[in-house]
Length: 311
Ligand code: CP
Image (tube, rainbow, N blue to C red; front, side, top):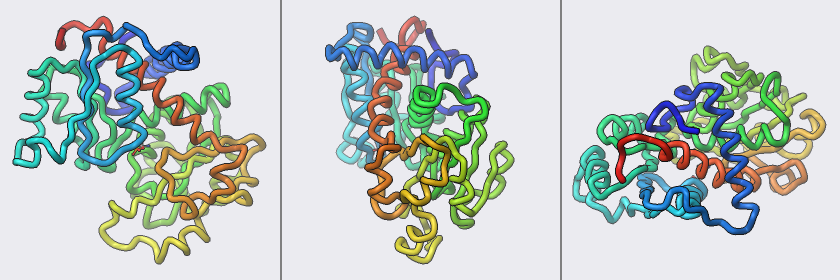
């Protein structure tokens, strides 16, 4: 019940067997959470540090809770008040945190590849909690776990990922994982928000969101990431919602019983209308619940039985 690598940096690094092993460990962790006694001794003596250079609610809190539920020492490094503000670089920051006895560093950074750089320069485990526009593997794992629980498996599962694909690390991690597991993935959004050459990843890429949603088993809506846009990539948010926003009428085009997903945070009324977000098909809060269990599984699999690291 361990991963081949000391780190979790990309969905592309995981084999199909490892993904399934993560899901079966997540089942065990979910049972612990649902038991109401959210405390296990399995990571007692281990230290997990969250180092978030970008804002987060779900990922940071669920890693902190996951570590605490497993009995580990867990803390958040307040990056804006740390010596990063005095000019300390990422590698030196990581080495200093490791020197304090850290076993796992969970990092979110605006720069694509920052977790990979850190992982090469420390011997403790590094988990990518989102690096720029590149990847967010733990989000993809919790999304895929939710799909598996609700739909049974991935072979032939029709997944429509719609919205701001260009800036989305969630889309990239999901598509690597879903394609590897045999899902049939369609990406859709305005042409300006679709990365060039993304079709080479083995997915269908279209600009008509209605067409993408038609017959889909899963509709994953992505947030419009205005903070990452250097220039206006669509005329206005109201025009965006009119053409690309997902509402109940659009969701009705999907397969009966289709799941509505969103990684959060949601721009309510922009990419996703409240009627759909709060409707019966929405599993958005279930994704969040599963996120803690998936992160418990990952912390367990990266630390238990691993040689080296910090005792
Ligand atoms: N989905 C996600 O990464 O949410 P946060 O930014 O709140 O962590």
